[in-house]
Image (tube, rainbow, N blue to C red; front, side, top):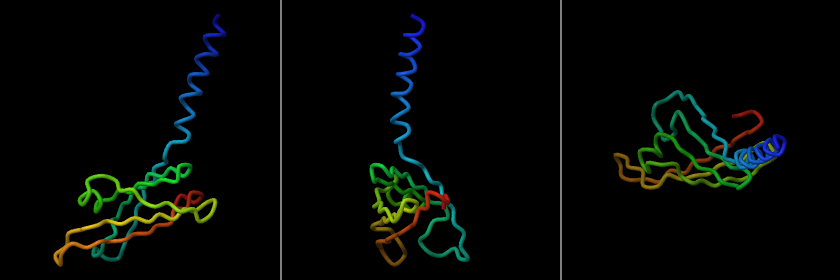
Length: 112
C-alpha cells in the first residue's frame, strides 16, 4: 500500500511539474546609455513563452502609459535568437502624444 501511495504522489507531482516547464520565462534586462534623453528605459522585462510564441513587455515607459505589460510580437530568428517587436501608443510628450516602436533581439543562449 505504501508503494501505491508513493507512486500516486509521484505521478501527481510529475503532472504538476509539466505545466511549470512550459511556463513563460522572465528576462530582466538592463541597458546603459550616454544620454538621459530618449524613449528607451534603462530596464526592460520580457515575459517569453517560446513554445506558445507569445511575449509581453514591461518597462517604466509602458508602466506609466499602460499600467501593465504590453503584448508584443515574437519572431524566431534562429534556435538561439528571437526578435521582439512592440509599440507604445499615445505616449504623452511636451510636443503632444506620439507612438514609439521598439525592436529587441533576445539571445537565449547568451542570456542577452
